[in-house]
Image 1 (cartoon, rainbow, N blue to C red):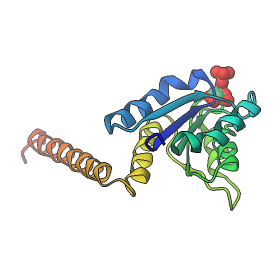
Image 2: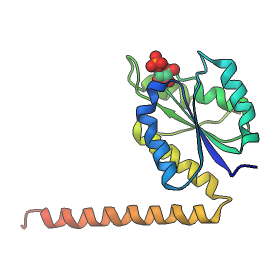
Image 3: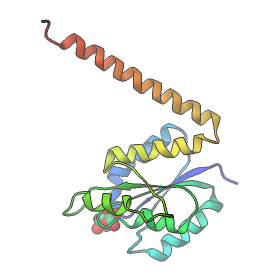
Length: 169
Ligand code: RP5
């Protein structure tokens, strides 16, 4: 069987400009990724066929991103027992409020792990998927710990620089 991978689903190719950050972040951890543009509303049959076949192809985590009515993450969660991470995207008149509320308000029994709206959420979706895969992959767990330490070092350096720039009183 193929190694455990992440499937990134976008509701439209217009979502890719933001979700590329998710793809790149997964790539930084060496996680294999499959990408599909599939819509809960426009291509429901193709979506169901892909999700039902994905586990057999080695998919272990779904990341689903959509804007506007954003049914995609919930529809994926309805079709699979694998974990689903939902990314609300900014699109249309309500600028992400619509997709956030659509994705976060799943009924009990069908969880979707909803991350932040837009690009921060795209990055966090990748990191959360890495954390999920890392529970059964010690080398990925180690890579994630290194990422966190490096991030903390960056903040330490920024804090130092900030202290140096403060006016002396
Ligand atoms: C959603 O509608 C998509 O996820 C996208 O964010 C939004 C607009 O789609 P397009 O009209 O650009 O295809 O389903």
